[in-house]
Length: 246
Length: 370
Ligand SMILES: Nc1ncnc2c1ncn2[C@@H]1O[C@H](COP(=O)(O)OP(=O)(O)OP(=O)(O)O)[C@@H](O)[C@H]1O
Ligand SMILES: [Mg+2]
Image (cartoon, rainbow over all chains, first blue to last red; front, side, top):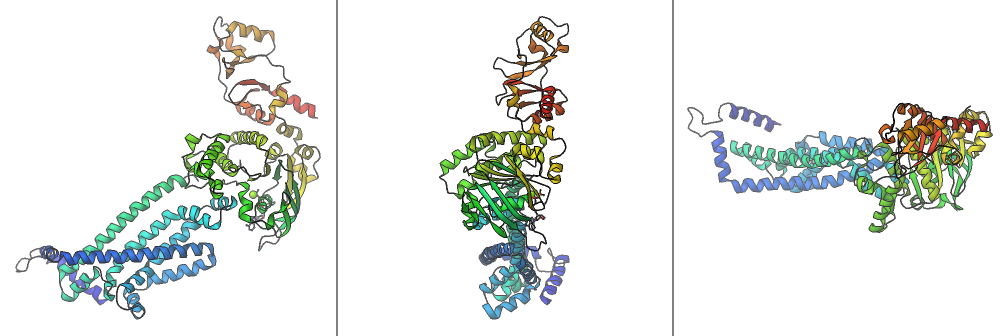
């Protein structure tokens, strides 16, 4: 937490007075120092950016598989639904520092710990959306599928999941954008990524590192948001045409 | 043949059973209509046949085989199923919807494709025009047609239809009913048909099973049901206007040939000839057809006053509605009331003129009955 306050104090100082070549000071302004830093350490920055991306992609991929399966299971056993959703909700409310610290004894320091924590964070949006996506399908559609002789597996794969897909996609997007930010904090337990720049920058009072790390994280988040919402819109557009009036 | 024996269905947590000790036998090739007030157990009865619901006790036999011992998936693949909400798959095209059961049965692609086109044509849809569309892009009536086509795609010997024509306006419904009866004449399936509309029951049923509070009250032919209702409940369900209800039972073609009607005029007949024809009889108007006998409209005697030497074509009034000869007399009556006229033209599927039915003809039928 104290780190958060530090960052805040730091930035308020930086952005009020020190932004450009400050009058009466002999140091160059923050922007030009950041540009210089990027030029000097572009290899490192690029590596950390890719590492961050990789952390997110691995986590979200596993999370999607786990959450969709969980969501499907609770759509069949509604007695489990409330419990599972509550547990997922609790996961999300655990502060990220606490969650990461708690993981270390089990998974050690490193990438795995980061991935496990990020998976736990992304459960709720995807499980919940899978569950509601399936539950919202018109009972008549499911009944006619069953009544015509489709097996339960075929009903699930041919009818339920395709119809719930736009809603599931929305959950995946929410989860992804969220864990891009949390992923920065995972550097704290050695999971790598742009968080390293931020943490190092803070401990060394090296503003350009912090700026580059923070902006890098935002760019990744915006990129995921853009790509996934584009995919979502495409699915929804098709889905809407099909669903309208039904 | 479907045989329901001593079947009772009690839903968990319900005090009274939804279906009580039901016995019902449906002959091969018959349409048996289940009719009765809302909540009397019609849908439940139907859904026990394809085992969406399992009976609490009793047995169901299909062609002598115990349905309750069969594999439910195999059982359902051979029973066509249409529900009131239609339940088309919104994410699939019309073609894909109709191909559902063929795909489940793993038919070869070519065979499925041919069958889908054939089924769509059968229910009056154009495979080229509608096949690639999604259900949301069709009208209510078209969707009902797709529902029927989908249920019949693999030619199942048995069909279960729960208010299949419920969600459309009365005129469209009458049309769908007539089309379906025409198809049934050809395919002769064993059909369980659920409705809460007694008029639809009389029109569609070879037999009618009247239910109340989960029990079967009477199972009889429409004629017997009308002439000998088993009790107060049935007679109030059938209603007081029984002879008018009989209009449901008679098809237009059954009386059309006995009617003595003037020949239709051709579009190029001269106005003088038409007037002469009308003056000689007591009829005040005449239908006009083109060279292919297609109905063009009607000319009334008043339209022709003081007109000479011209062709009929110049004075035709188009008709809003016509009926086909396999429609019932009641359908004809509906159209007359709808248009506010005392007659309706009868045409065949190609719009060729077959004759005219008047209000007087209907009155004669009702009178004969009494
Ligand atoms: N799945 C279910 N669980 C519990 N009760 C049910 C279920 N399905 C039907 N019922 C009850 O069984 C009774 C008969 O219902 P059913 O759907 O067979 O009526 P219906 O004759 O088809 O009526 P309607 O004309 O309104 O469709 C009703 O009292 C209904 O509430
Ligand atoms: Mg019902």
